Image (spheres, one colour):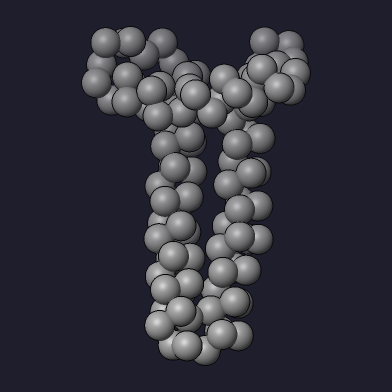
Length: 99
């Protein structure tokens, strides 16, 4: 059963890494939106392309714009923290219990 435990622990670790990287991408997107970035800059385009599908989905489902301020990145960050605390930790706990 140690193979299943190691697989679950590795999956939790990779998921933790992916969520952390995406968290920083969303933070960078939110920070760069406060200035007037060049839309043709490759970094700006990457940040927009990496985050806009999820942010658009959140904006379409929930009214998260109040007074011209878009709170969709905040909701995405909260969802990432939830997934890190619940899903990743549950996988790690399951790996320990299987071992």
